[in-house]
Amino acid sequence: MMDIRRVMAHELPTQTYLAARQDWELYGPLTKHIVAFHDIYLHDGPMRLWAEVRRADAEPRRLMFLEFGAWHSPTARLGIGAAVRHE
Image (cartoon, rainbow, N blue to C red; front, side, top):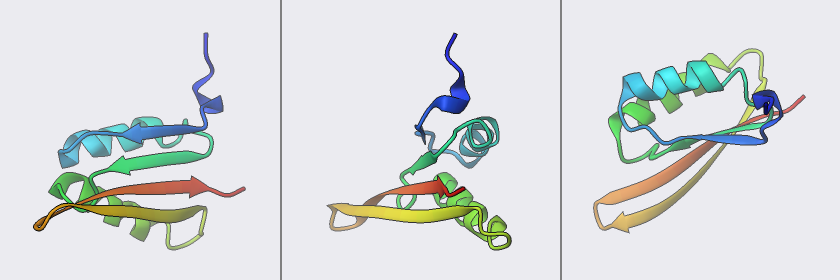
């Protein structure tokens, strides 16, 4: 059986706030290095959770936050947010 704590990264592909929050609460503590948040600029759920996670980690700084974005169309910006643990 695979030990999920050894997984290097896990992506949270959900688009509603509640589903994204549940994924973060389940996988966030279990993932060893990186948790990626999908659609942090396009959908309200992931965008809201991404902002909350960033605010919650203001003190003590346990995570480093990276954002990668691209325009899907003139009005839709896609984005991946990566929360990286640095120990």
